[in-house]
Image (spheres, one colour):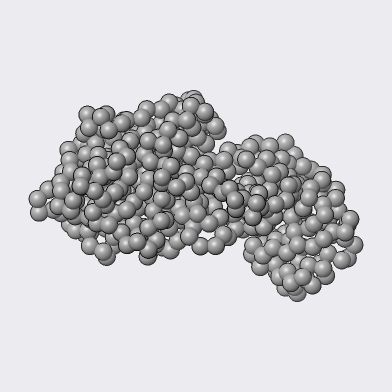
Length: 495
């Protein structure tokens, strides 16, 4: 893990291999952002002309390098664009800028950042962005490892906030480590991450940070009448699991349940998916990864809130024992679901887990899932959807996401769509028509939420896995989506 520290030293004299400063688009051209004054003085009047000559424009996340030729302790100054000049810069702009710069500096041992840190929110964003940018998944590289530059090993954030800076950076370290855990899990090949192995990671994580853990195997699942989890998992040679993680916060007055979809690989089952893109379905446990990682952060931060996590895990495979379209499953709590599409398996395992979570009478239930392709159609690959049985709670989740720097958008659960889930032979079918598919998936889950419990569902299908080029602090592959939002929200609910 990349180390991070803070310094009040002059940016021009701080010891590092590379120094990051901000540049912006001013009314008359390129302008240096706050934090770079000492660097500009060290260059005399040559820094701006040099950057302009190299093509720097101040465009957000644009990275331009210039050799210092001894003007500063660092051998290289890296100017990262912050967009248009402003009196203050949005935290997410700073977070992405720091991530872009550090990601571009892979192969460099030490980097100092002299970006605008006028308040704790700015410092937090820069610390998080730089740590998130310093990431690589190289577990499976051998002969090609030398061709890939290692992430920056040591970061120093230059700030004038003094003692107030340390707890801010400490929080950033914990959150970034949790995001890294989620990314690593999503990036791990499904051949090495069946439900048994994912449950083992959850248990190991719990032991490391002091969480209570319980793992329900297939026998315990049968005894507990978890028909959704067992049904989805019965087509695989690798049996399903349900992991229960528990954090008891000191002085807690609020109880929250987290639920995360853990389909370690989704072939679609009998309703098999097209071959194109199926390799990305190792990411279908992104919700489970987010919940496991969030629980590690909750424990390390010692949040004064009770959090119970229920993480259902299964592998959705076609075989002679797999569930078929028209099969009926009896879910936890007794609801009977006619399966009309085995590729809508995530809601089946989530329904069981949500029902179980509600049995402990939490104040709030939150679930995260790579649930529907319809989420991508509606909101694209970078914006998650938030649905809820309580308008105020939905907006609270969206607000927390904004503070955390994750794009989320509130979506409705129209009552008129519920009839699309009616079955001719059972209580429900598991999918409705294509139109409004994301919303009917949410309505399906809502059926398993107990009366009086506030619930929000995060569909992170697109944001959990970046199939395109890296950007900002986001790398190709697993992103760790929802972790930062969950931590921010739990902090707020803890009061």
